[in-house]
Image 1 (cartoon, rainbow, N blue to C red):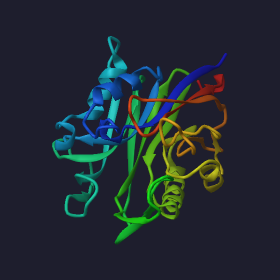
Image 2: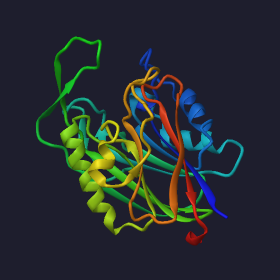
Image 3: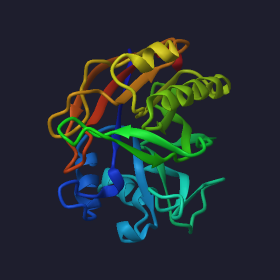
Length: 272
């Protein structure tokens, strides 16, 4: 027999309603819980930010996922301290500080997590060009680069331990490719099998080509509600024998600008 692990990756956009810009984490967290997964990777998570009503968003999402059941294991990893968007308001985070306003990523699990690892990828100097989405005036915006972070947890899944990495890469594709390669190098020392979940800001088959890992493809996730491109990915390391990526689908999450990518993994008996 085999076990099934249900996973998803989703960009929370700080829990803000993309139509109004106002905080609405409760609606997003409720939608995330409805994904009915065992492991959830979340990007653009605010922690004690004034713009998000000083909420511990990781704890609130974990509570929504748990519902009336056992508490979930959850960990937040800060990418920057302060508010993203300006060099005057943010600084790269050397580590996660519980009582400091930060922004970053989170990994949540229905099952216990045996251990955690973090990787911080330093920002490039200066500003990065970003082309506005289709339909907007055709010009480039110069936006300050942010530090990016990857968070790995060894999940004690029913079919055996599996390492899950959550990340959110740069909005500048060349920079994102370099960061993805850095994660691959860093992950060499992590236990297998290994799954990478995240908003990689790279389209379609690019992440699989860069890593050489198997991936879920052809599931558009951005921009919601009518996505045209897949920026959110699930990739399984090529050395992860006994684990197979199966059914995948995109699911809306309240009024987020990304759809969630939900997938299932089959874990063969030999992982016991």
